[in-house]
Length: 409
Image 1 (cartoon, rainbow, N blue to C red):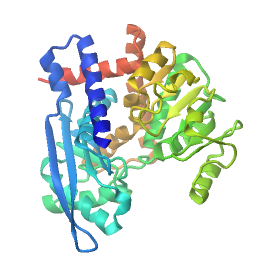
Image 2 (image 1 turned 180 degrees about the vertical axis):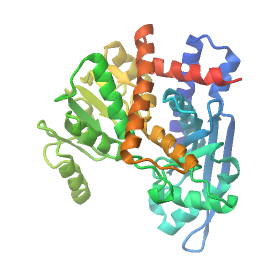
Image 3 (image 1 turned 90 degrees about the vertical axis):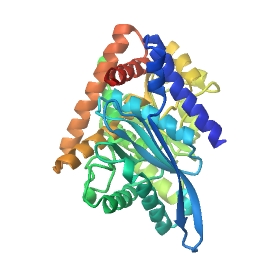
Image 4 (image 1 turned 45 degrees about the vertical axis):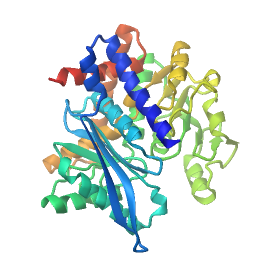
């Protein structure tokens, strides 16, 4: 199952780049260079478990493209992680960094493991083993890892500690998403959600629409969904529905996010009033729909029931290719994930800059820089979309491919 999913993801990412590059008239060898990873590392990690037994885990670090700068991308710990998935995500990181206007290429790492089944000491041993495997081909000017699914600032802390022990000196810019005490950046936790809100505000300004009172439904109540919903509420939007993996809550007066959060912690569900399913949330009659959880949630089965006029892709690949084309034809404005959720990697870049300079900014300074960079990235893509009468996603991919291919000698 996982392997097929990974293969599908990889085919989809490579297909998008190939199709866009062909439309742009790039030659086949250049397309091949854009699609294939430069380096793929695969390794075994042998860990002593608390029982004294040894256990073997499979790990990867895929370095996709370095034309614009060092490889950049997270490390995920997930039981279904496979090589193809890591490669697909590394490929999309190359696009995302180029879309965001960052001096980075794309990379990604992963371990096939269910971290919930490990004790804290086992998780630390695994994290340190992974860091020691990748030490000799990463570095602040080579490859800069970060957290991803099921990895945390604490895990980054263990990894950078292990890395620095091996190289023998401090290098705070080699990992991002670290704890503040180890050179992390203020504003990193909310960065992805905040970046998505900046994109939405920039879009509404272009459409001459008001944010005050505009209705929003957010699928996903993890870091990204929660902060997007909270910051959108503060900005005057009316968030009428949110959901986590189990269920959702609908409140036409506007969801009380603190109540939803408290309920989730105490009762395992966000529904403190009218409960709705994830499927019902997607089909609500709202102005703005924000899928911020899983991929492919909008697909052939439900695409005709989507009523929102604007979709902000905060998850990676929440729309299938088919549903994307169907909704775009209907006039739905879809802000693609490579732009909408690039706030995280943008603040990772700011953390890297701070680490290299040995000078740290206030949270306000970080947020202001994020706003400026996100708005600049949006502006370029919006202009291309309007000038060429193409959807935002195509404009984003074309912008990224132009930037990467022109840097490839």
